[in-house]
Image (cartoon, rainbow, N blue to C red; front, side, top):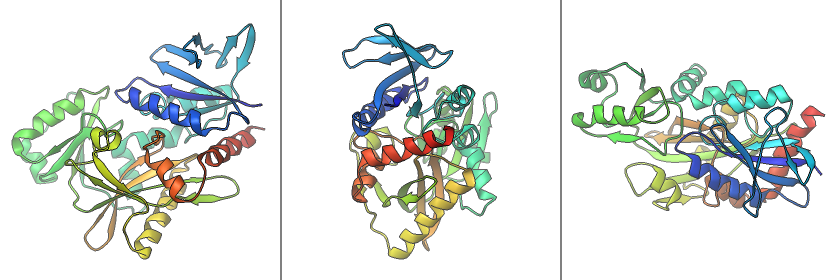
Length: 328
């Protein structure tokens, strides 16, 4: 029986979200088929968290632990850290060095998708429509007038490398620009992105590929009850999430086709979720790529899997077996 590590935690504000995703994955992965453990990482503290609450240190030399005198190396890592070091390519490089297969994108694709500005500019070169944006690095300043002239109001200010659940502000007045930039810099982050506001229908579409098939899930429509899809909307029910989305067959086809194209352009692996805004004239605009999407019971991917008439344990098996087969 292959030994699976559900790797969660991380060093960012999204730590609690990751822990909830780990609980979801632990329920989704078939434990009659796989010996499954939750591995929590927080800075230099890496440990296996047993069901009885006991914590056992991870040996980082070979990503293993010792239980009742038995040495237990892992055969596969299912990464569900939202933020560094699991979403930005760092852990992927570690697992590559140890030749341990894992669930998500490789080093390049993970690092690229984690950097919103770089990813959007890269995909823009392939004809993908994206919002106008500015990138600020720590120590740099920008005047209010420059933001208004280049981006306009309203706009979004958020950490460039990380999720959009924390330190993200929808700026509607000039007086809010600098406080929003300061807030975004307060995250464990040295870059801030300022993006133009796009008014339209928000959609999100998940997919994955194996060596034998391509799977695109039903599209979800997001109707936030707040100004935008923030932490409260994502995790505390402050949004309406409609799957499948209330859009035409033609638009559905176009969004799914674009999602698979983006997956291929990035050289992605595992489950990826792509967020869009559809503006006037059914123009599809990329918001961002989620290469390590949430896996809580309320997350989009489990919703979309259910809407597709599929079972999460089968999807997990597809991901795990596809990557295991590459290393054998």
